[in-house]
Length: 615
Image (cartoon, rainbow, N blue to C red; front, top):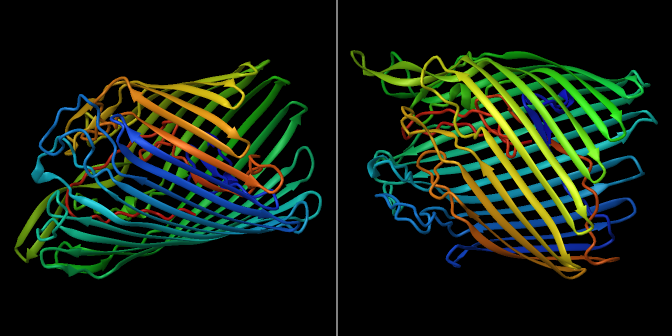
């Protein structure tokens, strides 16, 4: 995971870094692995399970692999001191059941020591319920379920050496997303007869590819050039009740391009300087909606105005190897993120109107950090500051709808606009240590101070992320084949907001204490058990969503290959995907390194939100 500075060659949108997703490939002529975990709540009742199985083979010039996993959650428990409400009686959290199945097939060709060509297929099928808000009135609850949450993806990855100094890497992919959101009449989820009930369908597809050339032309010219293309097609429609009528399908179609150039220069034996830049542009081909249009009566299928966007990115980084055990780095970047189709055109369940003119957000970041190794102890740290301009804010707006020429209604909604500004300052520290042949330990700490100016809400606070967060663990090999891993996670309070978006307040701090025990029965069989508990119960983030109570689990892992049972199945696949991290934006916070704000309002039955497919 590249936190903060990320190469422009990886593609557009990485304001705060990029997650590099890698997959295991087989390294033995025949190998197999299976894992299973059963979870229990604090009362010892069955809570769910996960299962995983993998078969693989590596031949002289090709390899193949099949993987299947399943995750099922029957329920999870609320804290013992949770106070029952009209919508939640405590104990097992109502409507917390979920299921996920995933199949992955991989076939690769390795004609020589440097080249590789792989094709992968992944199919994921899921379903889940939506737990009710524990403090909102029963009449305002959303009785929702997602019986279909399915993704399928086909992608091709290649690495080709073009001589001793030039490498070509390509990828091509197609990803589909099929989703059904059902809104029902009541908590029994057995009828759709009221006006707030609906079935909302998504049929999304993304396809695209990239080509990347890396050339080693000498100490001052380690050059990289990349081109990216992606097409997103989002189709949605809704069946509304009590009439049961189905609206026409609405389609959004958009192309995104990026050209990037990066050069790495060894300006001194111990100092390298990396400079990169890119140009991104987005062409909106089609943007449709079904609904009320000012000046017209009834609901109609209409098209939004079409607007394309352009953006530039530039960044630099210096790496200095001070000594064999000391490394320092400093970086400065200015990166952009285009708003999604959701950000520009979603009605947010009737609480917002579109803004086709929405521009990209821009983040300017500076970071200084380093690594110091003191024998068996490794220290890492970084300080950073980010300025976010043209932040996308949900701005109050009056939207007029008419059911007749002289019968109109003014609706108080919001509209996404580039009117916000933000600054974030952070510190990250971590230490890992080998205390003995049998004991490893580690800890990390993050401090993050955020300030966002939202001109529409004077009392606004960025929500969802604590200012202080820490984690520590010890990995102790008690005896041969037996190990214990105690750990603790600490976090300070964080801001949250009520459903109406009118009241901001802090949740409580918490400490999560966990323990995992592992026992290697043989080289091919490993058993484990674990659990965790929360020292501060009944915390809610966001509002209306109490934290889950601790629990325990037991697991079994079996490893088999033709040469040596139990051996780890080999190095990670060198090919990968990159998922942008919007470190300083108002959208999402990456796991483990909280960065971001989150806002959003709207409480009406129309969904109209876009979930982009992941390449």
